[in-house]
Image 1 (spheres, rainbow, N blue to C red):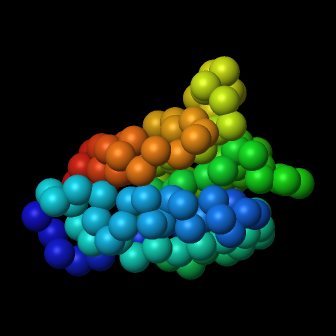
Image 2: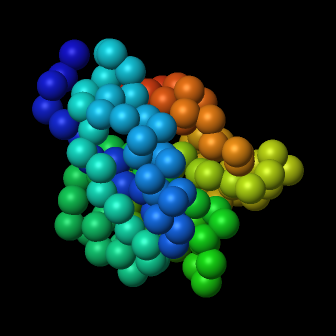
Amino acid sequence: MSETPVKVLVFSDNSSTRQAVITGVGFKASKDTAPIEWLEAATSFGVFELVDSHDIAVLVLDGETQKEGGMSVAKELANTRENLPPILMLTARPQDQWLATWAGASRIVSAPLDPQELQENLAELLRARR
């Protein structure tokens, strides 16, 4: 078990959504995963800048973000960057899962955001990264 923190980027234009993810998951996604250093972005530009300047372990993208949502950001990252981290996509409805999968999401959590579901999905992505 690594105690070196991993960076997880959460993207949403809604600060309440970002905080729901961060507080829902907490300092660690599970007892067998590394501590998390949370990075936040409210714009797609912020996501691209942080992806280019940090070693991100997992991207948590809000598919409901206005202007350029998480699904669009995921597709643009896939088309313009190599070796992307896995993506946990947040969707408004379970019916949006097919679109999130098309956008490149490894895992999907639909609203309302359940802290246990967030923790379990993020922990799986972090374990797979080892």
